[in-house]
Length: 442
Image (cartoon, rainbow, N blue to C red; front, side, top):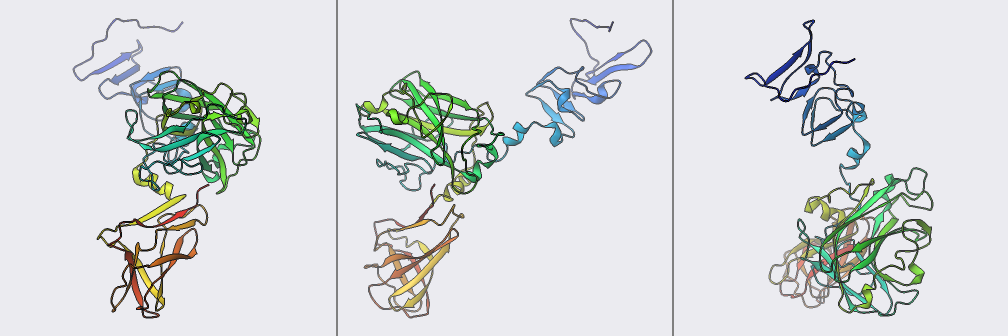
């Protein structure tokens, strides 16, 4: 029978050391309680599973193998820790743990906080309105947010739909690129479990739905969550077993989308908690939020991650998040109203036209659609000659790809020198914004 030492208290020496010595004179255990526990504290110089069952708020030094510790909480591990000794969930928490971009709704390049009320538009970067029916959603970036966040996405039922038809739907969604979800292995026997978490606030209580659908809208999983108190921030999470069927792209096309339902007819309804073949994103239990004029719904802290546990929202630096957004939409704004923001060096093609171009700040997902500000916002200047006034200088697309853009500016007066360099800037006398934007959203 193993011996036991049962005491109500232990007093240490002045140097905080303590030791146990067998009657043979061999040291069984010794440690300095101020510096912590190490393998050398034991007579055989090892820390094994029979010696440590649970460790909390403890410092352990030495070569530690995962099978030797049953539970570790708030523990500092020092020494050699190899990949074989660390669970996969730790590595999945490094880097881009959250597959949602702009989940805290800070970035709004298109609207600068102004509202939008048209389906397919983006009230903030990466999040898109999606609705069809008698109702209208009006959405915008908001400063109403839970503790720890500065922004949310606010959506209002600006036109109610009291009688939702079978084909009607109302939702907020974000498409996820295949490159960013390839490791989830959806569509295979190795599909990983994922968890969606978010903060939400609504003026109408009841059951709501959040869904994952694949890029082809042929596979869907709908999960329900409840709003318990009106106009109160609540934290929600849903865990979804990975889909082992269907096609889930792993390239630069849409892997799938996360969709928050605010109402939907029978065509978009299915049973919650199971994968289904088809395009579904709500259930018959969904609260009739869209049926109430001026009903409000807010969301922020949206996260999609591997595993069955919702972890704290991944807070990436603002510049990092902005660059992630640039892959799908980039708007370069040049100061006007007397600032004459510099755009680039130009080359005169003729006496009344010149080229200017630049690299995108971030490689685009695919060749983007180019958007340019209005006539009169660009100013065309000729080296060694008088400046071209803003009167009617217009711009048009000349060449564009994932990496760069080039536009052709046309002057109403022929005062350029063919083949000579010049420069383009924003017209300082314009009250309109001068910009060049590229859109390669999914």
